[in-house]
Image (cartoon, rainbow, N blue to C red; front, side, top):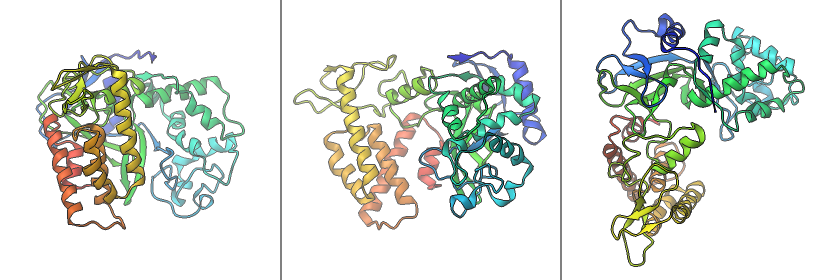
Length: 434
């Protein structure tokens, strides 16, 4: 379900310009907002843009720590600096229970949300509540000015069956959470805008890596393609930078990807259908071989055949699969079980094994049940690269280092086949910017 958007492109552009202000709105921006053939509205290049050129910088309309189950809560909710000490020691001294640094606990920006949390009366004043922290970027919608409020309501907001759960989880953390129906509906609308447009990612603040969830109205207008022409990164906790991954021609739409670049077509489509209510029809999605990368490939199940099978067509989430060698056709249900087996087997090793064990598993065991091009195995190789590139107590011999380099070369070759240009993943692999 999509909540209605009533502003025209011109009015939206005016709101965006006010949002950017003199610090972020360039005199001759490289972008403009137009109706898009992909979906709704999009960003289009006003001139030719070169690879790695900055397309735009934008401040967040709303932002806060991601506070997912896998993240630590030792991050200031305002400036995102790392906090030291026990939960009680890093909580706001005024009793709102948010984790805060000393400077931010008395800042004007925190004052209103601190009063709001205390008005709602946290049930546990000695422990940081993850659902309450996750709702922080949402409740900050209450402190927007009139222009910012209009801009929030000008954004696409898709509602899924889970969008009310976030408010329910947060409300359970307080004795007297608001019962005002208008306020709760405002929260629901904001959550739907987040789910449709927000960016989640890592940002380095004071040498501390933090996961941020932020709503950038302009950057959020970028539509999806599975091999995008633009990258993004956080310059700090609340500023996003969009750069060109490859040359972009004047009039060309500036697009990003809402999924992982090296996922298979069915994995991307399943994720998009679940989270974005959108079925991509880009050139890559229409090619069963995915530009010859065969990221979806599985081994043929026909007796005596050593070929690979790929989806016959890509317009459904449950296609038949055909062998590229013997041309045998298999139902999706059978191949889905086979893919799930590969996914679960490899992920169990990633979560439990050392790097050395992972390398042995990838090189010796995986070729028995999974083609080297399959996206799950590619993800496992990426996992090895990341773990070997970060500080660790594990020791690696020459063979381990050679495997790491080989994995890097294989993945860069896949990115080149996809036409991914100077994408963020390629830079991470080749320059090891972790």
